[in-house]
Image 1 (cartoon, rainbow, N blue to C red):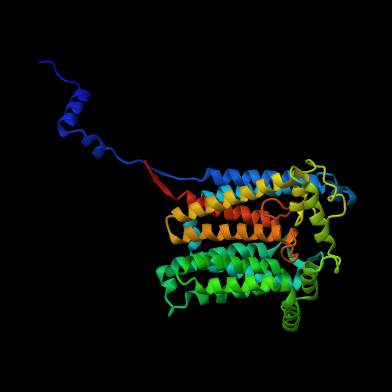
Image 2 (image 1 turned 90 degrees about the vertical axis):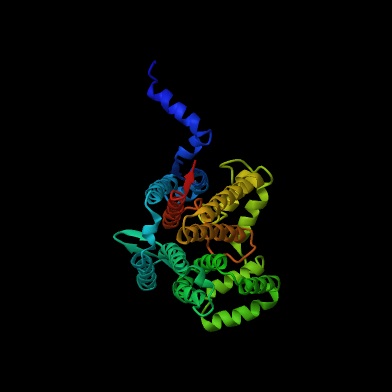
Length: 405
């Protein structure tokens, strides 16, 4: 009898065991997910921001006796460094950052830097928000936003389902800690203080089963907005009396409500830029408002330049890209392997979405001018680096999602 080969013998054995044997013996291949869609969306929006910075900052650079591409080159180096940081962090296991020593250490460092800013900070545009260390100036408020995300995610992860236990009062403990940096930040930059509280509120809202208090606060906020012209006197009396609002902050509120009466120059010029863009815009590089009339055209007020040069089409496209980034963060949060990773993604999603909404609301005069930058697009060093690091954390979470095939 002719001998069978090993392959024929194994095939005959599988045939004898039945057709399901191949499926049972085959091992499932497990691989880790990496959200390249999020990474490419961030790269795209950052590259778009560099183009708009180059377009909107040439005039300012020239009148300051600088090269026309000065701001563009600086932002390009910062964006490149931020992208490298994001990729490096994405390859690190995010669970390292949930060590108690790291979480509380980051918060303490941010508090120390915030306090140092009050004492020896660098003033610019009438506000003291920057501090210089080893010849490098940065904004501690941006670092505080990232540390708050890590802290709240850590506390929710540690509490688990017990966060809804009224006897433990975990939510009050979280806010008790958050209000300390929020108050320090608000004294330097009210908008950043609002963003910090907003980030913590979104994260706690997602974690909490009792959503009634959040809806009550939201309804009160909507009513206050509707009745803003009637209660502005009360806000001025309470805000200035308690020291929560500085004189220039109250002036911004009045300029928001009565822009023509209080000569809200920047707001009015921003609205002119948005209105003159029309459907398709004046063309890339053809903005007139950036030639002096609109202050901070490459920074806080870059969105009106986008509207003026690219029109409604460009503005909607930018908003859709941000919505896609937020959607990818939400998707990663839903599939994260643990609560810590999930709430890191939720915190970053809240940070980006709140800042985008506030910036667009400011330039359209829907809320008072609070000096909020547009993420990944506006000119600025610290904000871009911290946002890139946060994206790196979200990508690290995505890289720990297991896919079976």
